[in-house]
Image 1 (cartoon, helix red, strand yellow):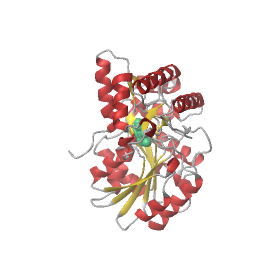
Image 2 (cartoon, helix red, strand yellow; image 1 turned 30 degrees about the vertical axis):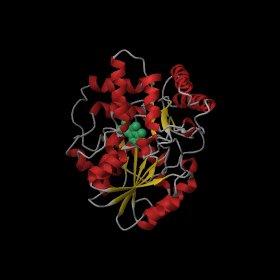
Image 3 (tube, rainbow, N blue to C red; image 1 turned 90 degrees about the vertical axis):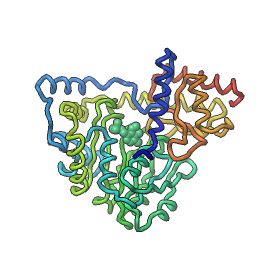
Image 4 (cartoon, rainbow, N blue to C red; image 1 turned 135 degrees about the vertical axis):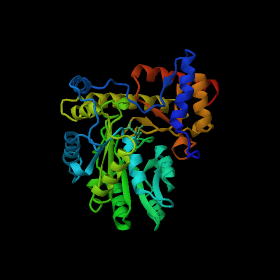
Length: 380
Ligand SMILES: Cc1ncc(COP(=O)(O)O)c(C=O)c1O
């Protein structure tokens, strides 16, 4: 356990907090957290539940009405063949991912992770005693399908996919998902499909991995409420998959969290209702993406295309002539703008990640500060 790496993203956060405690105004582009308030109908549902005394343990897998609502969402929006028994409600989708890895991966087994990838996947596999096979993306961040195929061997148990992707914003095409589904079904390997950024989509159509043929009994779909409904602090997410895997994950939940917070489950149920205003948040993210993308490209030292999804930019920083850790430190220490080094996502030292989940006003100020640091050091 002591060999686990500290969360790269949370490490930056510690440094940011120490600056802030000295009264320094840091513009945070390191956190993957919507700056919007949780929509009012969701807050009211939690409030009502608390006032009505819905403040006790619930069934460990979640309240039946929420499991049903999630199953219905996955059937109607995502084309998955799931019922209540296929659904587990968890305190955050991170917890769902953790349970899935713990339930599936045994000591010595291998897990394929296309990179750049969210850092927690690797550490979760390490906790479970497995080994990660990282397969770097090709130019433009499309997955290296041939590389993934040739990494599969008799020890391979699982593949972890994340589209729309953190940190690149890349959205897998239908053809890529189809090819990966074929690999999974031919080799009988499980796939953990992290679809947390499903709704943060600016072009094209979202396709859930589990809707492809031949993978029904192999896919664990994970999603949550943090990003879509600006509910990061509420800690609520879910997994859906084969009944035996979900049952095993539920046992892990029974012996750790017991159940997700009761009134938060009522809030999540309200979030899934059609009255929740999601669209305006997505449109605002699109405006911010376009703004920050064009600002960074204008600086000359960064190269980035507008990604189709999520709320991150992962520019190529090779034009600065320095590597990501050094650049992030400079931007934080001198410009008071926090970003995340590409190192954290599988050794991409020629990139940094910037989250545009921040107001236009703050993004404008951040762009000015970044430009100032680059010019001062002759890096632009
Ligand atoms: C790719 C990815 N998966 C999962 C999570 C975890 O989200 P939650 O707040 O639901 O635990 C995050 C959060 O940053 C993420 O970026």
